[in-house]
Image: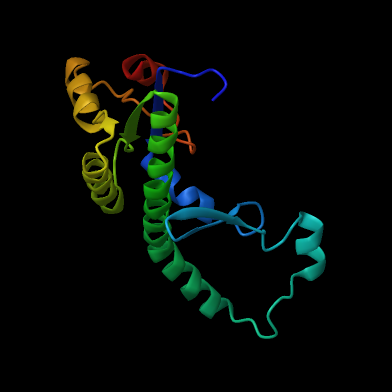
Length: 178
């Protein structure tokens, strides 16, 4: 805020939608209540708190644990992505309000992975529709990156380094995005 920018570009990799909900130990306790973001206390305030207060279950079945883990892996991502979409919705309202107060322009750039899964494809479309509904300027990176990929003759670089677990742009991806 202290720099009073003319334009604020808010870029979000769709996979980032689920990140606030992944780790009960290190992640923030974020919820949405009455259209506002609420940051609550963490379940465990520190690693020591976790260490001294965690109680393992009295009965353990590795078979049941494995089934639950597989089920969670198949369903938790989508649930967290949808919770992240709800959070993004509130964040966009807040950002838009702040930009109006500062007489700045907000431009949102949703970015999908090079090989989007069905959840990402669904949410990308929902984000674009949400931005149109909220009358927020946006840049449709999907079409843009497809166009650039064709211009570069589908070289294997693409724009996000697929070997990078964090999904950062490749050097050429940074140049194309800029």
